[in-house]
Length: 169
Image 1 (tube, rainbow, N blue to C red):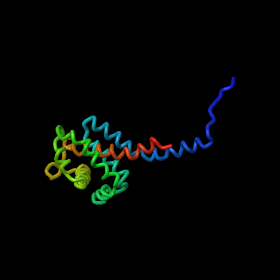
Image 2: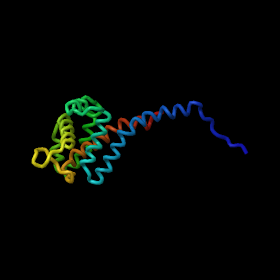
Image 3: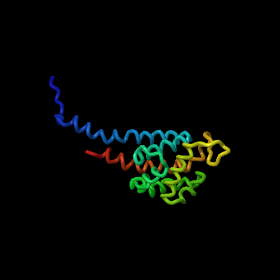
Image 4: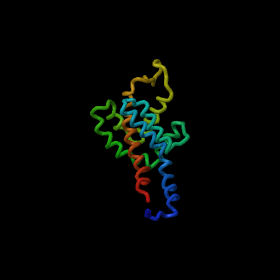
């Protein structure tokens, strides 16, 4: 009995390895999107906001925590800023049923970046109710517009990372 196998190039293991490297570089950032999507579906907008924000921090402001530097890094990124028109278009239908979505979308792109970084700081540095800027951990809907927009922005940006890997030779 003779089994004929197609001849496999000796370079196959190497090309397979090198093709997997770009995909593995994206695994963690894309994992944040997956986690964020599940959290949004469960109505946990605070948790989802963090997951989507971590996607952006990981790719565009790695290791930065200073809000001014994070804001600057996001604004400097053409990938982030070029994704705004499509994210706005995808989020526009939510104006009808998401409280404060219209107000968020009325901001300029730069103002939205500043606002999202400010929200991250607000969530990260909680204050008791007697302080201004406090939030309740069970009132996730307060962060629905920011999270919804951030999710759409992340999905648009992630396509620029995944499509080249998916269709590379």
